[in-house]
Image 1 (cartoon, rainbow, N blue to C red):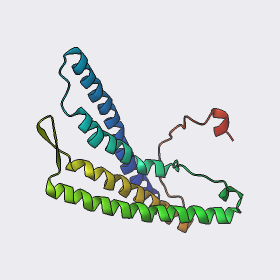
Image 2: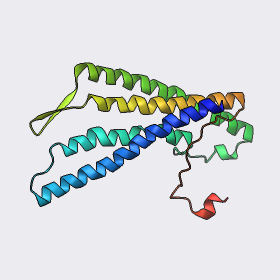
Image 3: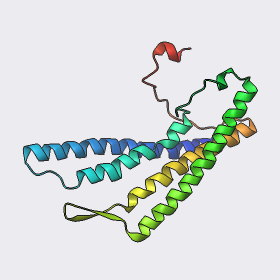
Length: 183
């Protein structure tokens, strides 16, 4: 289980790394556009399209699996934290299983849509030029597919009562103070 968990974590880290690189590229692209616009009075064509269609979609969906791997999705535990530990464990298992099912379903459906856009050669017209947009449709099935994979693997590990072997890198939560994290 450890080897498979580490392999899944490596793919998740690569996907999240790509999103991180795209954040840097987005900042560079927008900065260059602003500089070109106000210094040389010649803005870059289609910056808004690239930001909205390429960068932001990838940045939003590629790291989904990392968030799932680290259990950092938003959760409200007003009632569940008062239940006995066996019920809490069952609810965690059920939530992880449902997450795997739902995200796999979304991955399949968005994958179908991405293939339709690929086959149709989806594009946008911006500043008189044709910009191909079909590749952006593949970020969703990749992000949701990896999240489904992580959830499914965590579900299997829970079912077997073993460690999943997932090795998400440590990410410091900026909203927790040092005192909160020691509790």
